[in-house]
Image (tube, each protein chain N blue to C red):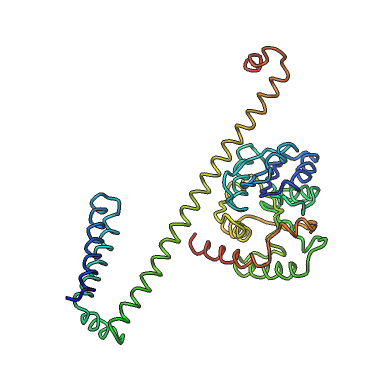
Length: 134
Length: 222
């Protein structure tokens, strides 16, 4: 094995272990964990047996194995960006809902505050109590 | 009762005069301060508005929806949306509300193109005309003006609105909402006055691209 393969296997092994741990701890959903796990295994296979990617590429009508890997990587990246974008939109939407809720709640506070101030001004001495009775 | 909802972002300079004029005409004024850093909320409150504060800037669409929710909660019968930079005329509020009261429409849209404008830059006119054509194609609503902040809704219509596009693209989204809920709408002529202030504070023409992208993506991902 080449030294590149040793390094790649080490990195992939650690990635796989992290994925496994996170999935067992339910930080990642089983589906997402499985997808990552398969990706690491596929990468390991492609690095261990580079000629395999060439064969798959030929079956798909793509010239070389490296091209296949490149196309796949680009697709995966586009998909990844899209997934992040969708999630970002959802977070932004939730953020707006929270900001709106806060705004509406504190508006009624301002109203209540104004009402109390008016009452205090009106009843000289013990105005607070009088306003409560009213 | 008619509630006038004004979304405002860093408008301390102009908001006072806008609020005073509306309050003087007997309207309830709800200003949604969209996370301003210039004391907009305080100025609006001193001039007699009910003020809601977004702790973070969420955009005009988000602020409108907040204001509408608050107006509904306070029992408004008609809800009018109004710009904060002084480009609209307070007396137009009555023109907008009239068709609602007469029961002819659920939504009334102000149009500067069947109405009058003052000091509108030619480039802005061209851009808005393009926006009108686009809107007719996208929403199928035959309007003469779009992205005009002056609109009026009955209580029932306003309760159906669900503005999800937080930023500027809500104007087109609103028209889609009219179609979706089969609301009866009418356009009335209004006066729009472009001042140095409103031109400085308003959207740059370049922003149209972002608005378009926002709208298309929002419609697709709704």
